Image (cartoon, rainbow, N blue to C red; front, side, top):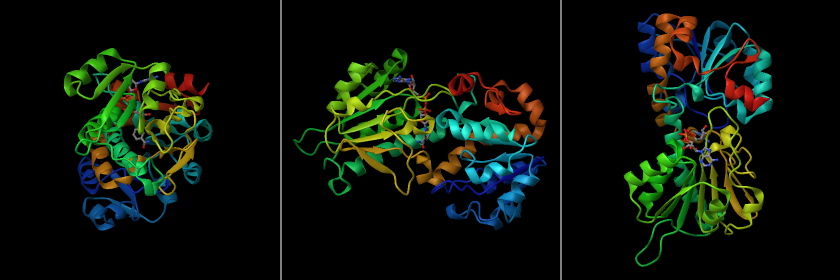
Length: 361
Ligand SMILES: NC(=O)c1ccc[n+]([C@@H]2O[C@H](COP(=O)([O-])OP(=O)(O)OC[C@H]3O[C@@H](n4cnc5c(N)ncnc54)[C@H](O)[C@@H]3O)[C@@H](O)[C@H]2O)c1
């Protein structure tokens, strides 16, 4: 089977879908792995390393796409890549179709089969290919949140944790799943007070059992509680997710007037359309903007800030699925493995995944 690894072209995206080590594992199984020139160079994976592990290097994206059956990527195809996609090709990557309906429509028109990392499931109901990137985005959210609270970065001018007798500041995390939990852990480690809001009572109980209740509030999410929490917070993290769907808008524009001037909101859910009404996608080059003097950080590829860590974590999660595809072939893998099949979002110009269908109608 011919596998293609194009160089990622999204803004500041230096992750690569396969490491040289992963290529070696797949080559041993008989795969023919085509890697675009310099695809991993920015994170220290030279073309020579790929070749030494059995890859063939091709000069252009056009050659990679036209010569591969399965194209393995990291981010959703960018405008310039759509012309390479045809009904004969299968894409295995993050798609986030519900987050950008325009992009979804254009991708559908290509007729490509799209298996989305973010809807592949595990037997415990978790999302094993979304979770490593969510963990990383959750950790980063507190780092960038603290950065934009600094006065030179137009923030309130606060450190999240306490200093001697000075009270710690408050962080609110809405959506306590994989990304939210990492944000919570990191917020706790700074010494900040933390409000945690989610719709799932068992999730909140589990978190309380793990983190205790000193300086932490566990709350069933509601509009009133969100307003209460965000009005006293320096930093608000949005990390809600409903599989395949556009993110619910948990903070409306009107609620922003309750927030402190110079406070910061990080919308991790921006790749699913954003969970704050005032969110719009931003890039690592130009990551923030202000609405009512509240800083919004809405970078759609946050893990791209740590591309080496993210590439290694992503490969750890995706490789078993790719190995299965190489061993059994694509159609057998999809019919035998319901968890991989749950990743199929589009095929032959049609939306296959029920939640995506509902979200895009
Ligand atoms: N911006 C980025 O670079 C980046 C990177 C990785 C992940 N993400 C995104 O982060 C989001 C979260 O991913 P995850 O893996 O943590 O998901 P998850 O499914 O583990 O967690 C989502 C949580 O949101 C909660 N939730 C759903 N609706 C809610 C509501 N209305 N109010 C409060 N809580 C609600 C759920 O109960 C769940 O606990 C996803 O949209 C994912 O695509 C973004």
